[in-house]
Length: 294
Image 1 (cartoon, helix red, strand yellow):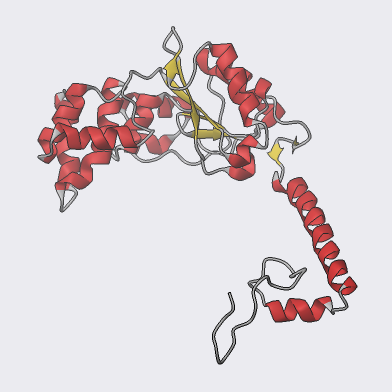
Image 2 (tube, rainbow, N blue to C red; image 1 turned 180 degrees about the vertical axis):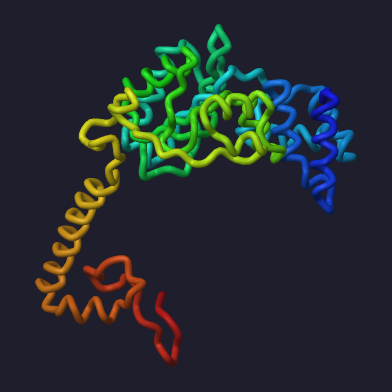
């Protein structure tokens, strides 16, 4: 059940919305900030506040991956294993952390320090492979860099992410995600770290971290220099462009061999054509008199 302090914040959240059920997502974050997961009591209290059934609240709670039905560790470590990260070695990163921590997806280490998950797209494809700690991203990490990251997280020395500030923990971040400002412990921590705006209940100013070797984390080789993330897409785009141009020229050559002008064929095909036609269509043209032979 909500503490008296959080109950007041929960009622204030509900009052923000013309339709009370619109407050459900922030309320679930608020429950998670207090209990460390979505407890049955928390779900019941959300249902009571919003005049919903527990089944309706539970349906939403189990739909979104950011809400957990089992107790979280102090920090949530997510490894993106979607396409862009996958082709940059994210599976090796995830497998390295599974071996190191001895836990799998949505499992928590015995000391309660880390919950590990593999995630769908974290929305930072140019920095693939991405590892996040409590939704703060660390870009371009190699398997060993990810292992170094979790070592520091376990030790309480969370390094600065690529953008943002070192996370105090998933409960504090859940409190922020609820839209009720920083947790009081987070405010005190912000003062220690020099984030003066935290004292006023605001959001800490953005920090651009020196990622890579300067932060003590190993990154994918050859992609980071002088502490700045290089353009991860340059090499891939160049290789793709060269391959695509070679394919295009091969098709143009086939068109020439057929006695046609590639430029004329391209113009006739129009801008929506996926490629030059290399052969005649398999269907006969429509007959104005009798329709089609197809």
